[in-house]
Length: 347
Image 1 (cartoon, rainbow, N blue to C red):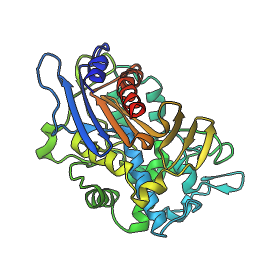
Image 2 (cartoon, rainbow, N blue to C red):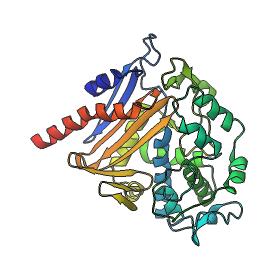
Image 3 (cartoon, helix red, strand yellow):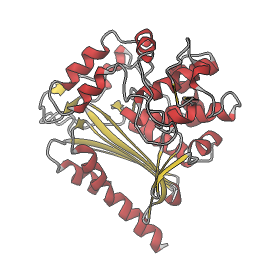
Image 4 (cartoon, one colour):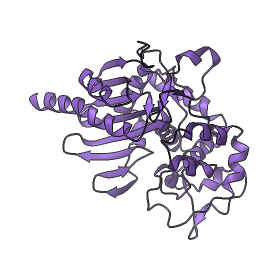
């Protein structure tokens, strides 16, 4: 882990990282670097990180739970859960279904409002965080429902991978309708009950604001603002600590029925790439079948890996977000995967 962190922090612009590893039942957490350049303030176990789109795997877990509860099926048309008629949410006579949303094959836009997709095309531009803040300044569920009427679904459903955070937000609403309670309550109750996670939330209370990791966008040396709040937040608003993420890895490596359901391959795109309930499923000679999700906001990026063959879970995050950040993390993680693979083959 130390070698992974040291390698990562050699990358230009990166100066802090935290890593959680669960391996054959044991937990390890490492923090390295400084959250702010020259401040000698390393992250610690109380630091709250913005985990970005790794949040989607939590929505997948809740939906898997609803399916097992008999409260939903993956073939339910999303229209079943919506507050008004949306005749536009269909293609070639087929309705958009829950399974299309969780496999990113609904042809829904990436984000709503639509102008956000244009902003994100130039992700590394210094103005991007401010433009995102402006787009979401007064943007809640009423505006989302309005914009949803303007969505055009083009092409066949359930076939082509097109990543959609807007689709994830719809899943959160469906869960609220199914259980009759807010998404955040559903989520925090499940995490507390099944994983003992009490420090993972969509919104940060005033007294915890100081725990939120400061972060840097692209090559801008000035600390940038947090990810703005989305209408439900399921697509990318979760904040968590490393001890809680270690508990999440442990949950994902276990035999909880909803976890098992959420790992089921639902669609195969290539020989080495399938998708489950929002989890990407990879296969490689070294790791076998494994589950992975990247998460990025304008000031943090992280990766979650679940490797059942080795009973290994890894979560890594850094408080910087740019074009090269994800690649740097993937390269640095090779130290951990090589070490585990060699330990396993020596047994």
